[in-house]
Length: 280
Image 1 (tube, rainbow, N blue to C red):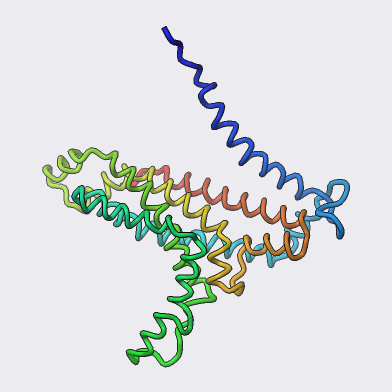
Image 2 (image 1 turned 30 degrees about the horizontal axis):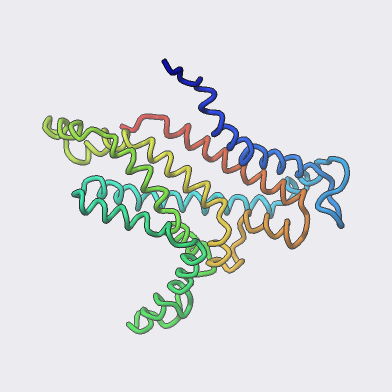
């Protein structure tokens, strides 16, 4: 009789990957954030809390961190408002149409994020497709400010990360027994009541996963805010890259990166706590 390996042994490869590719880099960033600054090397000798003192005493970085989290939260909310109805439509569609819709949702992932972001510059620019069309129709005289602001970044980020919202919700919806909704409707429940008291609570794990994925990805996004915002909308991610590469202040950049990760983690924790309550 062949013995099964222990569960801990089966988890060892995944645990090793998480440790080497997630835990160790975070430890490295945390340690580097406490190193002394240097003008000639990435960091000097010894350890200090100067980077965190500078970060805590400058309100500019607080404002940038808040703007970054706000952009991520609005992007997650927009993806949820668009992704939940889309996931429900895919779930209810016939098999042939379901495959087509599923392919349309996944297809943007086959194109690089740089290409997709440049595509939005063509659409949202002052001489882009949208403004040129509105001008040709006589609806506007001056171009609408669709780029180089938070609006353009949110629109582009919503398009880029929408699949990461749809797929977890769709997976949760596929796990719901259709007989549950049919039984509720046969007992006189309206469609809105079935959605609010049955579909939504049972789909909540997928919603949680989608919101967390989109929030974390949007907060840490670099290419899209840089291209669509034109460096006029500062986010913590853009600042981290600028401090590390252009200013060559590795300890302070590491401190800012760790603060961003900590703030995003707290937002995820608060969201998880809030969504534990039952939706009635």
